[in-house]
Image (cartoon, rainbow, N blue to C red):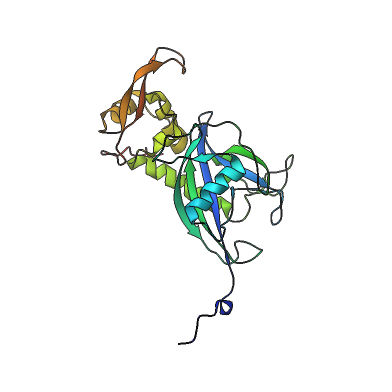
Length: 253
């Protein structure tokens, strides 16, 4: 057997791209950054970047999230920071022509976090913003601000669509919807997360009955709040359940 020769294989790079979702003003929003460098300079894109030689994928995703947005990743083994984000691997994208610079394979990650202030941009991004998911996925024309909106750079529209569908399907059978909520929240606030992610209106009484009757989904936090206006509403925390039985099925639309 001949010795392994790395130069006999074409070089390629590995990147991480981040689908960062939150609920703002009752709408599901994604974090996008305007690229400050070629390729696709000036176009909006998902945050992300190249994996360093000494990094594993999760560490690279967490680093890019901090560098480009200022958001930290929630570590389940330690107290959650105020702006902690749930982070999980989404999918791998390896079309040979997805990046005009060279062969680049991207390992996309999905990050979920509660309503957050405007992010800061860093790295090769010269601006960052939250944008409604529907507007990002419906962009079909090129241009800068003041002109028709441009599609997302690279294959990021597909990655975003996959991340949104992951979130929509996963909140059916898991407690992931609570990742969009602050540590203590009302049933009404949780309902608005489901409504924003699914894009549907839910019956408040039926929703309250389902979530409070699902074992391990919610636990009382021991207080109330009037931050939503009206009568005081009971506060809850996420329970210990990771899988919901019965599941919260998406209404057919």
